[in-house]
Image (cartoon, rainbow, N blue to C red; front, side, top):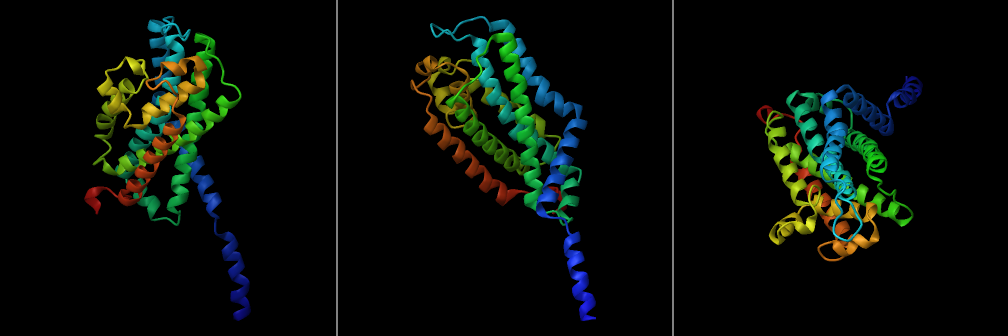
Length: 280
């Protein structure tokens, strides 16, 4: 009997899926769900393209002062930043709220799937979607508005701004999903928030043209720093003097995005719910 048990235990252990395989399965599931949702794909990919094309057609040829930078170039940097925030914050918060309302999270939580594997699947999925979205926007910028492709150290700046911005946006999205009472109210609540941030963070308007008090308000939120970081990547160095402080403020950008990530992560860990509020 002892021999039989010892012989059977390795087979049972080998049959158990590894953490990595479960995380990979979640990535595949999330990507399949995304590609099957036309509404979500339109929001993530088509909406930023339409905004870039529309504002570019209206104001694209206007030059910002004597900088030689067109409004289209300025707008593209802002749209890249806004796309990162929208994907990680708004889209993720709404999708988690929907999954909670439909008891999908409840069923997942009842399985042996580790919570870390579930969230890694979400995060990797968002990173991949953001990369595709940014590639599309850059291609539009190059083809339609003669935007210069970053080079050298600009790509290093792009990498850390992208990673910190994605981390902060994702953590905020997860934290926000637990604060939403239900999925029906999610879009109505989050869309005005995102629009407010876009209009005050230098996405649709030149940041220094906003009233000083509104600039101070925007500096509290991550999109302002994400947009400024992306401007340092896609705009020439001569534009740095046009920023509010005359500097790209890379150090402060890293600090603010990291602070938002840590704060949102703490809230997410403390408040995340797998069940609907009425089921608890």
